[in-house]
Image 1 (cartoon, rainbow, N blue to C red):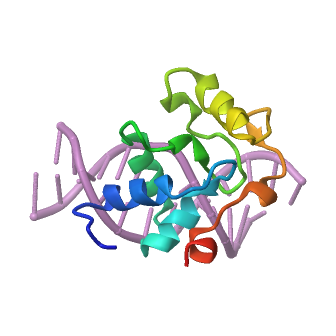
Image 2: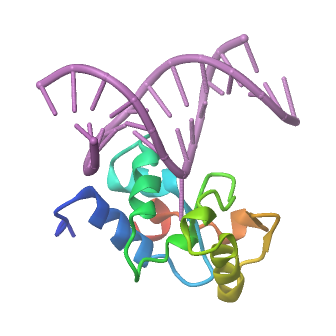
Length: 108
DNA sequence: GGTCTGACTAAAT
DNA sequence: GATTTAGCCAGAC
């Protein structure tokens, strides 16, 4: 690990590690990176996420598509998640606890 | 180099 | 139980 020049790259790598049909929260990634409570940084980094980073699999603690607006269209994120097998309703992930992927636990 | 802001989170009210 | 406040860190101006 640690081939990261910037905090952003760390976030991107973790995001890429998210298995299909799963999703995680900004805070979970933040803690995994050691940034602790700075979940904002993760969200911000994801906003600047380049192509190849499944930012649509990263949601907030409630499993809500907070940053959907950062995509081409507000439905891009939702449609992609549905395509991956994640049920999305009212901009929120259904069975969030089931699709929740914690890097500190799964990727440990 | 100080200030502001941001796809957040959790605790307090 | 829903809304508000405070905390956190890193980048842009």
